[in-house]
Amino acid sequence: MAKITYAMRPSRVLQKLRAGEIAYATKLNLGDARAAEIAAMSGLDCIWTDMEHVPNDWSVVEKQILAAKAHGVDTIVRVARGGYSDYIRPLEMDATGIMVPHIMSAADAKAVIRSTKFHPLGLRPVDGGNADGAYCNIDFTEYLRQANEQRFNVLQIEDVEPLDELEDIIALPGLDMIFFGPGDFSQSIGAPGQMDHPLIGETRKKIAELAVKHGKFAGTVGSTGNAEELVAMGYRFISVGADVIALTQYFRGIVGELHKQDAGRVRSVYADRTEEVAP
Image (cartoon, rainbow, N blue to C red):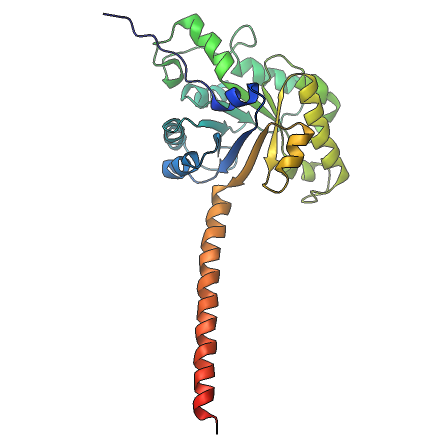
């Protein structure tokens, strides 16, 4: 009987980025595998599910990862800051990447890389008996090699503290993607919500330039309105929209149309009655 050879599922995001293409994602706040599957069916390259701000549990995230995998779409899990187990658990559930918020220094970034990459890039604890390792069906050394090649970390810059070490952070071996978060950054500079603040623009541009310089990928949040500008700047991974925004806009749109129809009916009835009583 021929031996079956297993390999780690390739990353759709990394495949596109390494080919010089743009990868697009969307953010999920809802803890539902069906929401993840709908997003995956839309043609996006990646879903980004959140555990920093959202009270999702691990079983919910696991189902979302499975839903995305069914359609060949990557999943990034933004983790809550914690110990190494918080970082590697999503990867062992076969998320394609993890996003670590609020990187505060080069030392902080090194610690994250150490926990999320195997030798020789880091010392991520090894198991291999979970979904990413095909439940011990991938050879030990191949598992380490393929994980370093097909799984990625995303380190977020959202504060002023790491700016002095920004190039040192981005140049670190084992860092795959640097991701600019303008929302929290605006708070950090004392200008909450002022997205046109000059320092936000300067930092966004500098991150992209340094990523290109050091052969890393730059990511950020964007929109259909500014995606071209971000790509021209050097960003190759762009997260657009969110499930909660999509649902809000959809239902508000429906209600708005119904209210227009209601108003039209009222005007029509009023006009009819006016004609009836006219001399």
